[in-house]
Image (cartoon, rainbow, N blue to C red; front, side, top):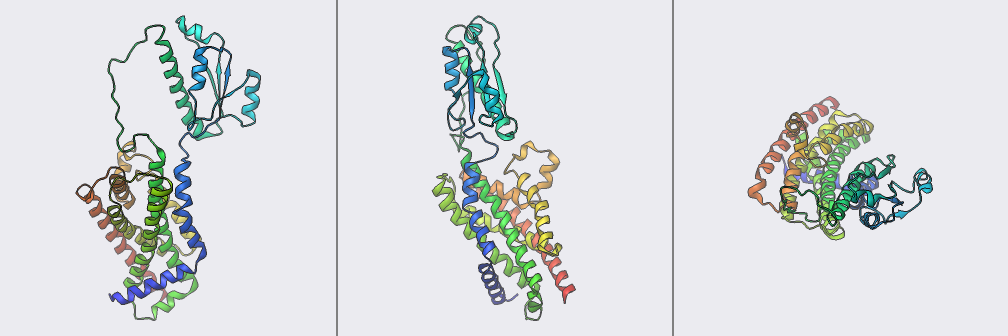
Length: 373
């Protein structure tokens, strides 16, 4: 390998990327607006959900329940009549409609079990599913607290002292922004390297490289370092100015240590991008392969769903994916402030997975070039 060839070929890739406005817009969007919107509007969270209350009791307890719904989870409740409930839900004005019956407070204090009706607009699936549990908990807490003032209520035999570490406010923005950065690092590194190779094949410039005194290793290494550098720089800017700046997410650990892990992760994912590009024969085929690869990587690596809640077989299989170890590393460093003494196993594993993927991709790349020669 001649380092000069690798450097010059990498510079060529960067110049080619600069002449591709669509890719530049994609990079800018993925590490700015995409991070911000994903952090502020997580689909599985309850945020400013519209709720209406039909209060037919007009008691201190019903007023207490109504005042328990407030931002950021709910909009201030709209007090409506029974006749308005169905019309408002049909018009999509309310996701939740709570009906408090007459004599609700007096029935409760008399020891009876009154019923509250909750109507849910299930077409808003994510908020309906999450909000249902929130509303039940809020009503249960308010009713229990109110009843304690008038009659004895059974206490829990154990007093639970809850301590929240690393995210005391349970702010999902902190988690969502970091996970979106990780997902976009994986996506763009695969897309950029794969598209770079397919673009050269479609434009016929691969044949030009074949007559030059360069080896397949040098061509592939140039694509890996150049596209990896672009994603790394975009990730750094996003982490400093979007995550820590605009979103005000406190980063506990060393950003430099995280970026060092990102370099190893990019080594693996850029190699994966070239591997997929040697399998696909066109950009549409490459796009379909991306769907089959990216969805499992993002959903089963522990970023969206904890690995502990997955079947053991899935956990074992996903240990072969670089994203699994990168997410472990990122969460440990950025959330918990871990140092190299904690995350060194993930560093070694990422290096091993990256070397394996690079070797497989290089073999496929040599075979593809040999068929074109």
